Length: 230
Image (cartoon, rainbow, N blue to C red; front, side, top):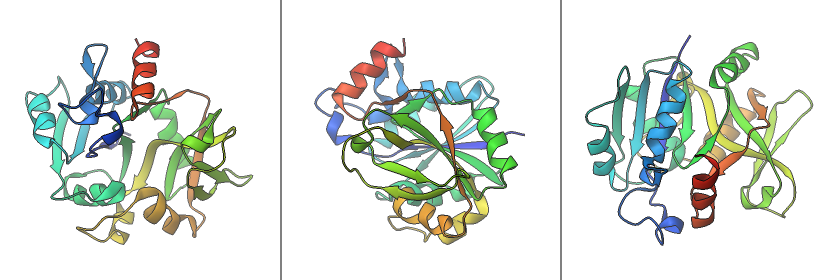
């Protein structure tokens, strides 16, 4: 079974503008190719064939680049009328999502997660939502994820004290039916609003990966990704 993939690429990328100012952050070139295209091609390698790109800031750059499409893939752009945050952007694209379960990926981070295994993880646990979770040396710069012994996520913590810990790797599987809980046309966050509302029912699971998390949201992270993802 495959799923549609929704990629969140609407942010302004303020922290990255000192090195990338002429395009939206997910379109920053990484070894000669837009980062966003790299994400699409990576997911396509696991059989994902349909993508919805949630665009906001400089959306026309994303639309122009993908207007010719990529072989064998359907790529649609969902424009945000105004910034809607992560879950709000997904809600705005709801009408374009065709599969009952769907992937969500942050457009400014990358983790070599086995997406087919991630889908199997979601179904085997009958989860309401699944979140890819990576272990990092400094969870303080990301915000951390707390889980119980069964792997259920119990809370998302904002950026806190430095130290090793589990963090949200920015890849999710959601049930389309749960988008009914998201109010349309308003700012609504995945970590602060939607997922906590699902956690209360005990149905949000963390899929732990040992793969490295790359975040291109800062000049340092962008340079590191360029060097290590050649």
